[in-house]
Image (cartoon, rainbow, N blue to C red; front, top):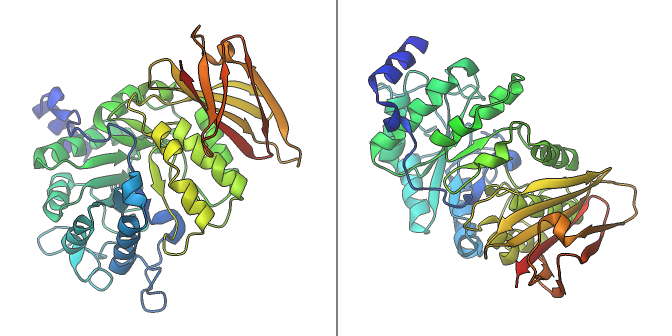
Length: 405
């Protein structure tokens, strides 16, 4: 495989390898089955929650009728375990015929009829993480198959593969996706496996070939998991925040809002921080049974507007004092900021968090109109030498917006 990739790189001019699909000008938004439903393939005993056609049609129905599409959530994404155990006689991938009786093309047509887009999962290696057929040796064929099916989003994982091949492998799939002529958003797991191997990824190179990329382990349904991801992004090893821009974003993994492991306060933390970090907003919960409070949080227009800000700048942690952190994200209009006061302590007592506006980078002499994002109430006008103060609950966040005046 390495020899084939080297020949590919030698024969194809390097500019042709760059991703050129015009997609992800803001962080993509949608839904993915993995965190909530994993690899449940038993559709006999669990027809409503198995990885099958019904689940994805149900989610498409909920997204189109429940306000999610209107809010910007447009992708219905399939993760691992959708495949048949073997490729077809022609070498092409096949969906499991029992669980996906209409095939992926039929499912894509249904999702498209709802005004939504369909995403799919594959793996660069010989097998997917769950042991289904991988794309190694079949990159060109698989890219064209996905295009023929009407797929709009590809997540390419990295199990059963050699990370030393990634500098050739992931760009190769980028090239073949471009060659289909069909715009397919390209999500890479490239840096996650490099980080897992103890190395620092070459993020500018990755951003050249991928729309979004995972760079940390899979999220789990717990506060420990969410907080560890936030810490990783705050530490920003390799300055990966600097390469985030329209068309290319770091992906800290799915939103678990609406599941079992987070308190209401912790759900607000995840939503706020994913918006501050310009992260893809990819839900992984059962939209058929989600509670009203979690749904309202996922649909919060003011939070989503910050995530979807056209500058596409990833927010950064600018201060860490024990278990209290301050994060800022430049937004439009130019000179404005979103900001977060984060309290990761769990000792039961709210913390008073204060910082001078100028110390958060807010130096306009005209001052700022400051409001809390989730509730949307206008708070106050603050000048650069004024101090912003908020009470922040344990494992909680104050999510603010400062609009330049």
